[in-house]
Image (cartoon, rainbow over all chains, first blue to last red; front, side, top):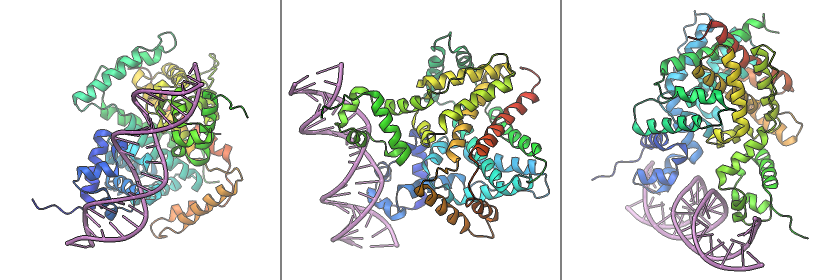
Length: 221
Length: 221
DNA sequence: ACCTGAACACCGTTCAAGT
DNA sequence: ACCTGAACACCGTTCAAGT
């Protein structure tokens, strides 16, 4: 059995699988090395440190964000295209929200910068000042991330069904006089969710806010 | 010098100060113990484990969220009161966003549950289904958290001014042909920000989205 | 009740050395 | 160029023991 040579690619893929199955905290240099049948120090040849490794994971996930905006469209439509592209890139990897949380300097992520620049451009056209546009842009990215994080998983795995059941029981066992609404919500967890509907609602919520703010201000100050 | 007895209160306060000055990751059982002139194991008398300690920090910060809603007001107004109360509780502690990220089970936080229940109640009145209301509620909490996290600090500390300068230089040194908007934003970092304006804009952005979604749906399905 | 001491099983990272 | 071995300075946590 000839040892395969270790590459950045294989490391990133293994790490991503680990993060999706056991959480971002489970991604440890030593753990990863043992999964790859290699010494921990071997990883330091391919990545400067753990921070760079995590950034590579995030970059790998976001690399699919190709916001090929159609320039003729109105800004509302162009913004939606970008946001939906980000959602599409993220929603298949449950670990993404925590992953982005672990990356300190998101400006190191090229795909993140590309998406931000495209967003800023659209928002400038919508009449926002540079500062407002930047705030709105972070708001949108964070909103999408939160959407993915809060998404009810329903892939059919038994482990996941068990989690949902426990969650429901915990909600329903709260003091009924103080938390009637939370208990009511708990009840809805027994029916299967509409995932596409969930994301559609969330994206609309995000974009509607931006549109309302743009409409309020007649033009740039 | 008689040793003061260790209390949950003093531990939480010391930990919060540490988190605000050096980041949440600097809050370590051992580090905290040495700051309190005590053995690491002493903390385990007062807190079951680190998770519970972090939850106590979050609870301490959020405990100020007393959403005494005026029941006569329209739901839009009542929602705004809640959101602004959360902003007020959070904005003085820069560590809060990372802190909430470190708390896995937010359902353990009583103040969080209170705020969520109040929000769900208002949103039910606005015509959202239980599921939609829950999604909107997480959206709002996350939005406020992101707002605090992205808030440009301007307290006058020299360390902080230096950080901002570096941030601006980094933005302005990006490739000019690909990132003109980000460079333009970088330029705005040399002028002092309007913090209240920042939060006002952010809260409006959040609430407008919710209002638009409520208006779109004439009633519960 | 409240805290200490010693120990265990983990971390990330550096530095020199091997091939 | 690519990886190993040994070592360092950290973690959170358990368990028995002290007062």
